[in-house]
Length: 380
Image 1 (cartoon, rainbow, N blue to C red):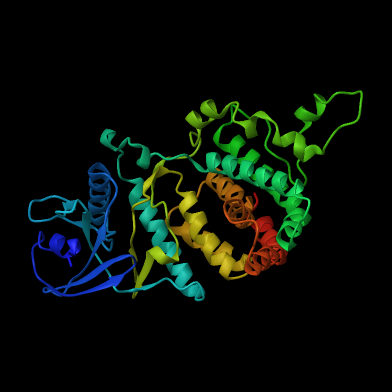
Image 2 (cartoon, rainbow, N blue to C red):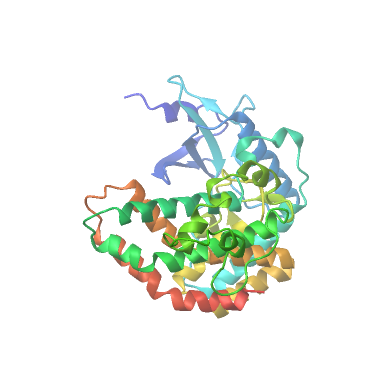
């Protein structure tokens, strides 16, 4: 049997003592005592060069524990086997992932994230890095897309004559979550695209006065205010191109990890190892911080004290501006966990919805009180 990965390993210096499967790749013990990871690769060489250049600069700035790519005997980052399969080899680490049950470990990890962001912010952007994968759509574009998907699922369920437990659970709480989605989206629009929105959303229920003024005076109003707001330009993308072009302009742009969670932060004594930079891009670093904090707080039942402590710990190392704090609040305000369940439903077989999905929806609602308390503590 032909194993192309064994052929690929022959293109690298050194000798492998053992090979085992792990994380969808091959973990290789090298004769010099180092551990490396071989995996298939479907991206471009330019993307590999981008990641390599950034990780080298991070190393020069004190962030040395990263899974850098290893060049083969020809000096190339990409190795192609005879059957055409492409491989990359990376430095690897056997340290364990950051625990979301240990508050001290999470506080330590967020300090390391701040140092990573600080170092990333010092790296000058290069013209050759202006590729789509390095400059993806920002958080506002994602919010708009997710909000449209929420609306689509609600419309589908409304038209269903026979509704199961999942559908009834969605309808029972949809308006409150959708209201949060609109508040978050409108707040982020005002922050990132101030020329589009004249006024920020006020605390409490959102009232769209500009739309209400345009309602016809005569005749009954069909539907509710949420339905009206769902049909505005912000939802249909009428100004999408113009807003997308200016998105993130009011917040500093810097390199971001792109997929920062407990799985990609390994603990090595007092140090942290950062891995999997394949989603690294230029954007708003608060999206990195939000992702890690949300993972931690969901596991800790939205412990407001812990959340504030983690934000403060980050701020000591890498100060957070007022605008960035607002951005962080709107990211947390968006009901991402609820959207994920609706998105799963939208792409799954609707003839049978697992009971665990109904339980997940109920668990999200059960934690709303503690989540809202946390939101009230970080709202400026």
